[in-house]
Image 1 (cartoon, one colour):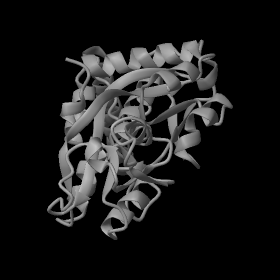
Image 2 (cartoon, one colour):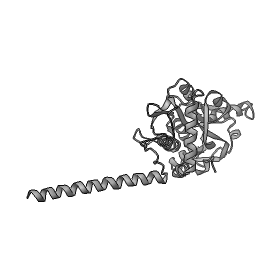
Image 3 (cartoon, helix red, strand yellow):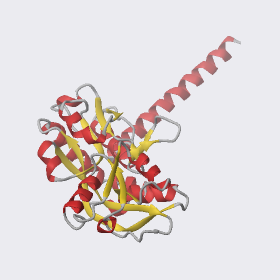
Image 4 (cartoon, helix red, strand yellow):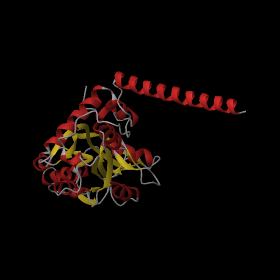
Length: 293
């Protein structure tokens, strides 16, 4: 009986050894083919050199984001799992840098730039529209484009098609967004004699709820977000007009973090080149926002 037992053990070791060789060979083939790890995977070695980036030496990239803005970023219903365009792009970038990505819900979107400047995060990645005021405070890496959309009740009872059509009406938007700036500009211009009654809310879902309840005549947000809100309303709300004043989103880093900015730009370029960027946009049906040919 003993020789037979030894034979079985020898056969087992041979099978395990062969499996290990095949797995190693497959891994080597992937390296030779230049395959990029999928979004969210952390490779054993960074595809991009981060040795000169102080913020990443702990193996983590800490990102501040307002995760109440689907489909750009939000928490999966009933969970603490972040999902969305920005989330998938950030995970893909982190994989190329060989670091783990960690997301932190910001306390107040209006203060997100200030939070970055005092080093509460390494990066802010949160549908931040690039404008001169923000660019004066932090560096922003363009990666997507969106305009303002207007959400109204089904049937558009007030006939709203533009921001100027809001003169004398009530409109809701999230504090700290470009939509507040746009309505304030309208109040100083075409709506000077009949101001928009601007209602501000800490997050966009609260602003949408005001519209659903009939307390305001419109909700303003980025056009992909407005389209998503209309879809989720199951016919109660609709989009009025087209996108207004399209502008790029930016990944925000501190002005004293040039090394971090450089590797983020390199990673984004690689995602564009290998098709990952286009695939992530397609996954969220946001191809229209691509800023890369």
